[in-house]
Length: 183
Image (cartoon, rainbow, N blue to C red; front, side):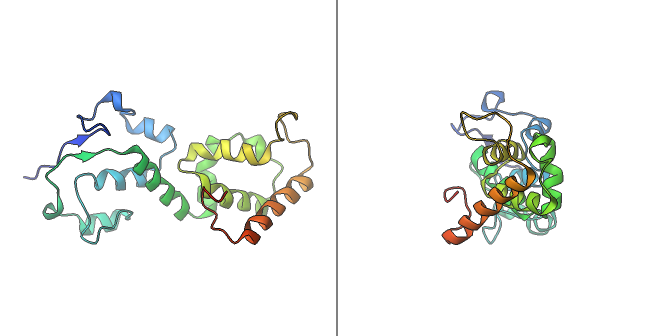
């Protein structure tokens, strides 16, 4: 039989409830994708021969083996799990991403956007989102009126589309990667 190393919290003590979420449902409600969580848990205490971290389920099944299991305790690093989730979010087709993210968003923010602008918005939001729960607050920052104005967007759908188009144009002109720091 095989024995996996103990999973430890960031403070290197045994993982326990005081370290955060304890159930799959909690991770789901926080906006983690199941595939990302399976991938993350699979590499705790085990390493891919090519040091690859983000893998499909088929790649995990093909490459996992007892010969690559470590002896030291594995650290459950939520930040790394969030990074992995971000990688999975970026790899999703845009329509699937929208379907998964919408339950975590205020739908009224999106009601005046046509499909093209909605796609552009989600492409932009994906760069800053680590979890599905990040999409709502990020969309609100982009679509809601600035501080001191009413809490709903006072413009028409055409005005909103113009603002989104201009923001995308400026980001493209900047020549920077659309990562979190650049945004």
